Image 1 (cartoon, helix red, strand yellow):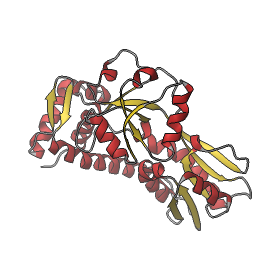
Image 2 (tube, helix red, strand yellow):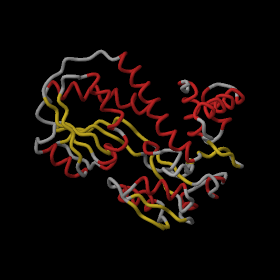
Image 3 (cartoon, helix red, strand yellow):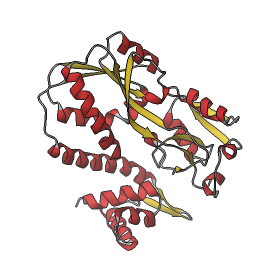
Image 4 (tube, helix red, strand yellow):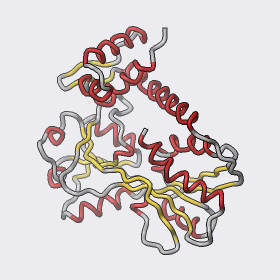
Length: 303
């Protein structure tokens, strides 16, 4: 006997929220229905997927392994539904698209299937570089288009940029961290606690900008180029971090929970944008891809 899709969806909702009651609200069902679904799923799987604690539930080792597969199944079903609704376009030729590491890790896995479904005959060449290198390749005509963090892009009259997504930055922490339980959190409060600093895709330069605006600096305990390392350290209670909702996941690789909350002070969003050379006029296939991405990006990230 295999789990039903509904059981998998409910399981993912519990994993995302960390509480059966919140998962029930999210899925618009009663708490008893959610509990019954989880019990039935654990019987089918033959393992306990969550352990209970004072503030909710926590993934067991078996649950953490199962979550990865459940998310893949849910994503595959969504892609199948989307594919049925997409009318393919006969677009040919080659389009060279540049990306930065954040885009590769958190945007491309969902975006590429949508592009392939819409333009099955288009040869899309994707290359990853640092933002400055991508910009220069666009200027030199060696790339047709690029997806990158537009919030880091300097004012350049010879490059056009269309912002596709604005992702809020919030405070990440262990569920029992004092700031996660406080009524209100300001950047000055964050400065009093150990901070885990991500060194990825010009993130440090962005951090310095908004901290400097308030005359503050984070108390950096550890710094890493690996977002999974940052996630694990935060989940283990080793420090807190301010990161974008785009890269948020409620669990570390070890199955420990991460929660997030809004900071009272104004923190800039992480903006993902589409960039191309202002002149000459774009080729028809590049123009068609650009128009599609402006719509598809929002829909893909919504899922």
